[in-house]
Amino acid sequence: MIKLQTKLRKVAVIGTGFVGTSYAYALMNQSLVNELVLIDLNEAKADGEARDLNHGMPFVEPVRIKAGGYQECEDADLVVITAGANQKPGETRLDLAAKNASIFKGVVEQVMSHRFNGIFLIATNPVDILTHVTRKISGLPKHRVIGSGTSLDTARFQYLLSEHLAIDPRDIHAYIIGEHGDSSLPVWSQARIGGVPLQTYLNMEDIDNNQDMIAIYEGARDAAYDIIQRKGATYYGIALGLVRLTKALFQNENAIIPVSAHLEGEYGLHDICIGVPAVLNEQGVREVLTLELSPSEQQKLQHSAEIIREMTRTAMTAVR
Image (tube, rainbow, N blue to C red):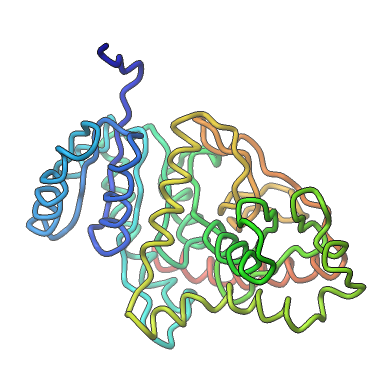
């Protein structure tokens, strides 16, 4: 029986570096899209990547993959931006702010000049700041500009907890929120193993000061630095995370995933993009979930927001 496709889905990936191509490869294995377009300043690189991916087509369900220009964004449902300067060893994500904001100004203006009317998904670092820059330059409503945020931080956190506890990571419900970077924070107060509070499961009175838990959080927070030092870049984890976000959007899942979302009052924060759990469906961010944070966690989130806000001001100055 012929499988009928009820809705065409098109994704344009801007940037064919490690992250962009890993995402494209992972995406073609998931049967989520009908058309995938690779866009890069280096047109030959984009074309080579498209050709290489197409040679694997006999092994997967059909998807049209090609290199193209910004005009391909006109009818795209999703534009995923992975382009930008890479994080170098010893360099923080926030060091990249002004440099990548200038790159994004040109990229986003090019996309919008072709009447793009879909959803932006931002992966380039510092992702919270560049998500804000994208929203301001594009003029799109806040629910249609999403950053990968702390989705990868949270996945790393869940994995390390699963290793420590010998529990399937899919049954560990624990978030890292705030900046995708050094000022992030674990929400210990709301962490659950299945439906059991983590603190109860561990039989701890003071989880915030437990050395094992501190080490697990720090391992998740510093994972990128460790990987970059060893292999030069991180790309598999974030690529799979982007595919998960794509699936939530295209399959209208109403899934709860921590992303960089634009806040207007949630958590007491205004006009800022920061990593928080949000409900995602085909419209983008349906709503932001407001977790009940402990006083200490709320204070740490405010501190993280202050760092993002200061760097966002620097980035926006660079694009004016």
